[in-house]
Image (tube, rainbow, N blue to C red; front, top):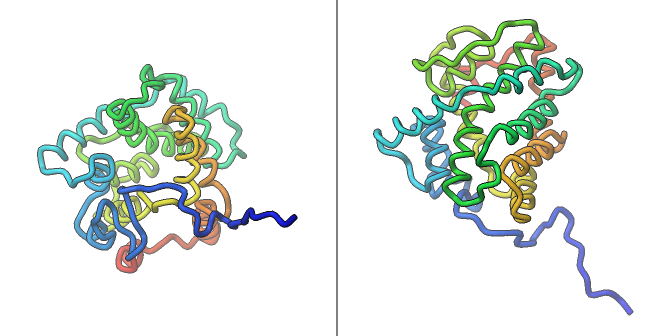
Length: 247
């Protein structure tokens, strides 16, 4: 007898879930806002608030959200020590995946699974992932770590933490736009991976660690990572003005 089972490569045509967070049916949208408008008019913290809360923040809400991010932008010392102990040949994505997983051990609310707790954990991760990236980058080059500057924006701080320099307004804007464009892409591989993990009622850190593992692959985020590596090896940095214009 022939089987009636059908095979859908890559789950093409299969409804794997529903989301109100983003859509790509008529161009990429976050919560109903066109990505072009957000990239032109918003900052990354505003977009992060939109994705988490379902609406763009007013000035008071944005100030409170930025204060939460600033307060959480500190790494436990054992995490910093662990990063320095990881062999230099380890890839950046491998290190990030491990570090995010390790942060769970220092979060007393790791296994709290209500919406408020998960949003709080998300805010802490938003604040600490730039710290992880910068710490690993600077340690791998024998450079001292830098504290966040409360006067800088989220995007400017990320660049400052990595380079140790004050970014230009154009560099800051390029980073801001990049973060906005990468913030959410509906059911891509890493998002799908995170949803599978959370569907088992696992914790947020496990879901994000798994998502980073999926993101590392050369058919997903790893492709972008390799492009940046090639540019760096060739001594051809990305032109920020051209990047913002094209974005």
